[in-house]
Image 1 (cartoon, one colour):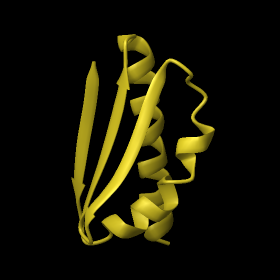
Image 2 (cartoon, helix red, strand yellow; image 1 turned 45 degrees about the vertical axis):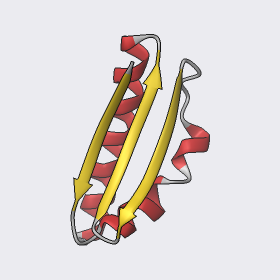
Image 3 (cartoon, rainbow, N blue to C red; image 1 turned 30 degrees about the vertical axis):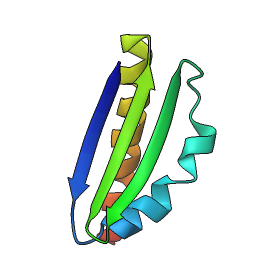
Image 4 (cartoon, one colour; image 1 turned 120 degrees about the vertical axis):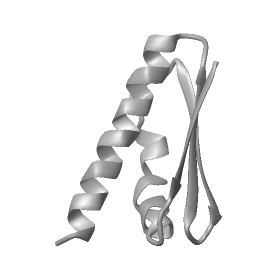
Length: 75
């Protein structure tokens, strides 16, 4: 199973730089994650695995990190 989200935002490259290191620290071992900067304003996060609950948990972690980055960019 694969879950993907694309973020289209002028600040996508900043999201990418902030989130890319998190790939190494994702606590879920049942999933594989990939973050790609497609263009300066487009980023894609892909989470793959066999366990839907693990995929959802990993994806929720990324969404929470995105929210944190967004809040810090507003400061």
